[in-house]
Image (cartoon, rainbow over all chains, first blue to last red; front, side):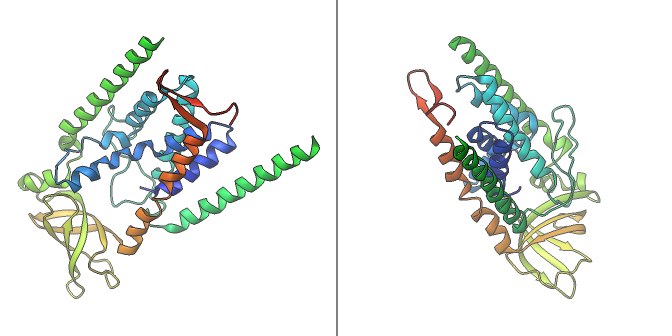
Length: 152
Length: 157
């Protein structure tokens, strides 16, 4: 997995540039890692039979996004923002280096895993680059908004 | 409308639980986990498997690494490799893909070694993400206990 800071920052950048609900895009970007609930069971010494794995598959993550969206006034708008966040998560994780296998993108239709081995999860430079990109995007939008305020 | 939401919620929840149960029951037939592989060693002997764990000891001359599997029952596995392990230290994290040649030995085809501090750093830099996401969310939304929905704190906020 890429670290959560990178996921949230990519979600923030995506929400900001696509003019979506940033808060929900960021929450959506973390949904697939609900699969980490498995760590709690490992810590308790309980074998969970990989029960939580489908949360890190697109269908599982989008179902969770659908359930969360029901707690908002505009379900479609909330689902769209959460779904965009979920998508950024999978795009980022799709390029992680593993020894074998990848993300089970088409489950339950296929058990095949897909992955492009590009960067390692422990590569902190990815986080640094994304952090710089976030500040850049924030700066650009701040400058743009300030320009608009000065005009009016 | 509220009944429709509730019904939709129940349907989505049941779908999710069904999917998770199906995966849990079937995954060992398609993508077996390391516990299942070692408990059914005879079926996987000579086949390629993927495992992961923490380096417990290593022999740089013989190019072997002994790892403790990351999940219970935390078996010890010996990995033989042709890759350079001169900088590998006990405590480092290993992901291996290779041929299972005995119950506790893998002939590595691919090896991914992560230094301990770099692995810890992944979790450390994940920590600020939680308050950041919660701050963003609760700055924008509040939970209305009457409607049982999240509402925007201010328009276009």
